[in-house]
Length: 185
Image: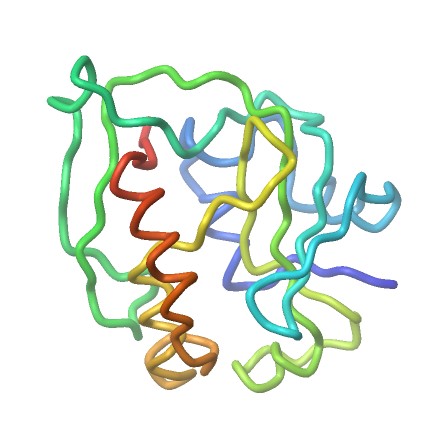
């Protein structure tokens, strides 16, 4: 099985100007090489048949991305409308500023099949492409954000995958993200 780091994921996981809330102590090339050479601890099913999650023990100093919201840190939450790419419409996002999360125990790599990547405009000979990565304390998937589920349901032309909205998964996502937020360094 072969894995590539997609052009979509590369700037999000390895931005030109390094940020503390992205993958640390690793180049994009070393990350891709690790995924191809080291077997994952677990392979989980993703939200659709074309999506798999490879759970790896964190070999970097990357910190957990999702942090519980408490009375002590609620005042550090920020919001803004942002788009992930120039072609996408901005959506409301929320994050913490000024916190120090723990180092993640796991990197949960989100992979799409070659066929799905082609539908979304990425042609490759690799079997799988990295579209994202979760930095977690436990070897489990962090629920997809509600806005990402909605974008996916809108279709490829709006930056999504074309997978219809699963109402129960959406409710579980809202439950989690009502009490957690990502952070920015």
